[in-house]
Length: 359
Length: 182
Image (cartoon, rainbow over all chains, first blue to last red; front, side, top):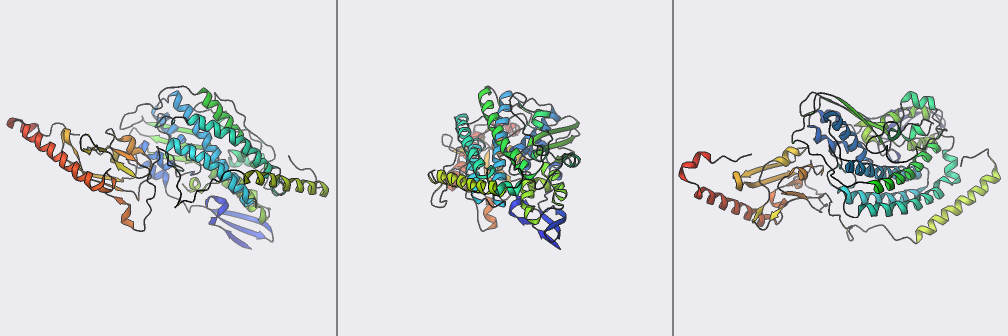
C-alpha cells in the first residue's frame, strides 16, 4: 500500500511530502518530495549586491535566522578581507547561543507533541517566548532578526541586556530540570524513542550528516570545536556525543546542548570587552575576485555558504549547504523497516526545517 | 538512563514514577504567573528597537521632514520598496512624495541604517494587515510624523527656503545653480 504523508504535517515545520510504501504496519520504502517552498534564493542572491542578501538568509532556516545571517556575513567578510571588532564577535556568539536555545526549544516542544506529550509543547514555547523577548529587545524583530552585518553587528546590546540574559539563564537551568522530569524520565517517552530509528555511524558519515544527528551517532563533529569561528575558541564548552544513534540519543544531544549554550552565554557575558561593534565599509562594497567558503554550526548542523566574486558589486555564484537537506536525505534509510507509528518520532528527531531544504 | 531488558515490575514502578513526576511539574506550573496575553484587549509592551511601520521624522525646529530625497535608502533596499520624488536641490532639498510598498517589505532595517540624515525610522506599529491589496502602499502622508499637516508644512517650508535662496542669489551666478547636487 502506498500512502502520502503531507505536504502539510505539523511535525515537519514546513511542507514536506513523504510517499510511503507499506507492508502492513512496516515501512518498506520512503521517498521524500521536497520543493514546495522553493524560492530560488541562490539565484536571487546573484542578482543583488552582497550586503542586500543578508535579510534573505533569514528565510532559510527561519527557526535560527541569526545563524544564517552569521554564515553569509562570515563568507562576505572572508571574500573582502574584513576585520570584525572583538566586541562584535562576542555579541555574535551570545546571540547565536540564544538562537540555538530558541531553536532547540521548538524541537523539544514539537517533538513532545508528536509523541503525545502535549504539555511539553506549552512549557517549551513559554520558555522560547522568553528568548524571543530577549532577542526582540536586542534586534527589534521576533523571527527574521537580520542582526548581523558584514564587519560586525548593527548596534550594541541595549542597556541592561546582559543582566536580563543572566536572569533568564538562571531560570532556564531550573526549567531544563523540569523538562527532564517530564520527558527524559518518562516511561512512555523512553519506550517510544529508545532503539527507534537507529542511524549507524558509517551511514551518518556516508550521507554527510552533521549537527545533533551526527553527534548522536558517535561522530564528535561540531564546527565550533573543529574549526572555531568568532570567539568559540575562547569559551569552554563540551560537545555532547552519544554512540547509539537512535531517536533517544538525538533528543539527549539537544538537551545537553541547551545546557552547554547556557554555559557559553555566561562566559561570553563575563568576558565581553568594550569597544566598537562595526567596521566601517565603503558604500559600494566590491570584494576582490575569488572564492570564499564559510561554515557555521547552526542548531541543525553544518551550515555553509560559498560565494564567488569577480570583483563586481554582485556575487557571481552563491551556494548554500543546508544541514537539514543533508540530514533529510538519510530519512529513507532510517524509515526502512520502521513502523508507521514511529514515523513522526524519527522525522521529528531529525528536526528539519523546510525553508532551508527548498531554499 | 537507557533501559535494560524488559521487566514488567520495573516498568510498572517506572510508570508510577512517571505519573508522579508529571503531577509534580503540573503542580509547580499551577502557581506560576500566567504568560498568555488576551491580545486584542491586552497588549504586550513593545521594546524601543521594535521594527514596525516606518515613519519619516518631523523636525520641529526647521518645520520640515528630515528627508532630503537622496535615495540612499532606496538603494539600500533589497526589494525596491521605496520610491520618492525629490523637491528642490542643494542645501534645501526635500521630498514631495515618498512611497513605500510594504507588501514587498521584509522589515530588515537596512534603509534605516543607510540614512545619513536621521530621516527614516521604524516605529512600534505592527498591525498592518488589511483586506485590500492597495492598503500595503504607504504614501508620504501615511508615513510622515504628523500626517497630511506635516507634509503640507514640509513642502511650504522647502519652497519658501528655495525661493529665498533664489532671491538672494546675485544675477550673474545663475550658471552655478546646480552646484551642490548628489
